Length: 139
Image 1 (spheres, rainbow, N blue to C red):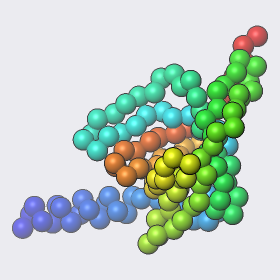
Image 2: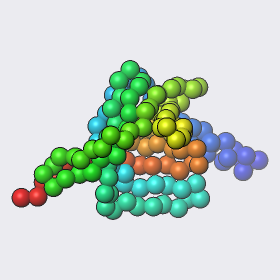
Image 3: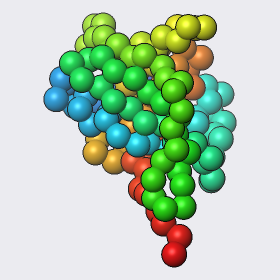
């Protein structure tokens, strides 16, 4: 009986800790994001110390795109013409980034979003933790 109570409390805590993503939160996705780490379903983690590319998101009215950009030493970003189309959908109170390219379609659930932090989870239950990218310059 004790194990059941502990299991129920654990489930309630996990469900209760998830951020509800509201319409106003979606604008926070816009901008440059640098991946910090990936958390694997088995509990393993992959840390990203140095990122050669950064993700740039532009979303308006639940539609937009994501591009991989390369930071430059003058604080600018180098972009190419490749991008992934995004449509944001809500299902049962959960928000999803639905990506489309000419070669594939996939989705990621938005777990948490703030001005400085973005966490998404893909179909393989891998969580990607991003921080807002800060431009840098070398003088």
